[in-house]
Length: 515
Image (tube, rainbow, N blue to C red; front, side, top):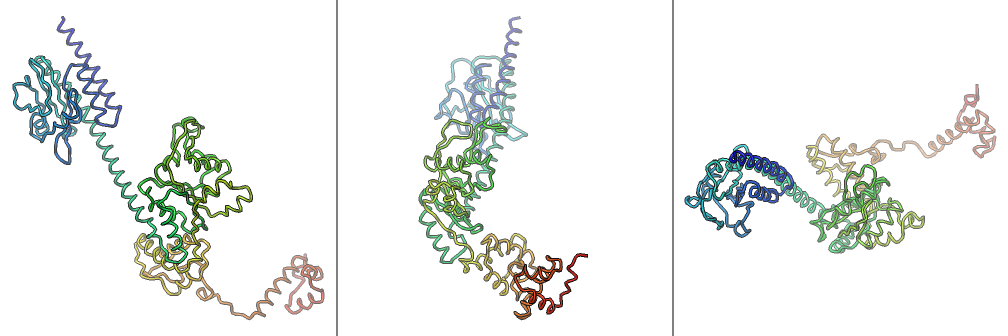
């Protein structure tokens, strides 16, 4: 009866153990943090001592101790095995468990770690940790005393836990591999951006752009706040990238915020983040762009479109480098460089009380003006060649050259949309080209001249003046419903002159009278 009672007690302990093991393995994504408590549970519930989990490194092929009870860190570092070496190595090599009734009598137990072996009979069990025939490592433990039945039950429970550990290890390895892949991809993209946005890679060799490059080289090594000014489409964001990637913060994040694109109701949350429950829909806490940019650079594009309320909060960040999330009370401190840009006339905005003067001076510590394309005409062909190659590659076409008429049209145009407009024009031309050449007729009507579109003026000045005069008289008669006297007064001429013009141009006034 007592033996039956002991059997049930052990079964209950095993069930409690397995339940707690399953919960423990779900608590942490770190393998060691998840496995160490499992080994403690083995000792607590079923009195298995010296629990140890080893894992095989798939790159080196070596088996190392991932976690162990009753072993110091130094001792664990000594436990390195090759497949086939010792009991651990044999279990990994064969994929079969090994049960040793008395470890003191088995020479396969190498005891590299210097594990203390208590007096009396000590059994040792090592079970492979496998998933779909993939041998990941082992789980092993010792029992002081015990009999053959105990060994069978220990083997069974370790086999179950080994299967649970295998699932956990597989999941965490997948997460780790995905994390590593994403980090490698992130590093690759960062290097690509770093190379792409270096000042030497910005296209343009005009005197105006050389001044911009000199300013970038002066300000980039510092943490000074920069205000980039220029018309829309001049490449202000490109300059901001160049400043970041030429600075000591180049390894940190580069976070862009388009202030004009964010609605007034969400811009504060976007910039500074919010706490859970701060407003309807805030189901969890969220970092803002300033926090995400910590250690790097934040680029505030279209800064002139910020509302007065947001300007006040931004001023504090510029001064103190700290803020509170929406709905929060804890102050968040940040280490971030601020680069702002605008195409607005901030001086006029200040005069109209639409932009804070103190914020302006905080932002305009180091202003950089990006010249419009019409002020850097010598860069147009360089940019056109670059865009032709870029979009030719994208569309699977080889653009060999830009024709002379097309070059002339590109050169004489005033480019109100700046570099962005030029890029769009070349992309369209590449799409239309069928012979590897960008011709003048591939350019949009806004760039065409009278010669290229065959719309040259063919009449004399006198002819055109008379046409215009006739149209004016007809419009005046139409408005006065054929009343020549009224039409003359509306045009500011005498009735006699009106009569002469009607006769000259053979205008039938009855056509304009109501029927």
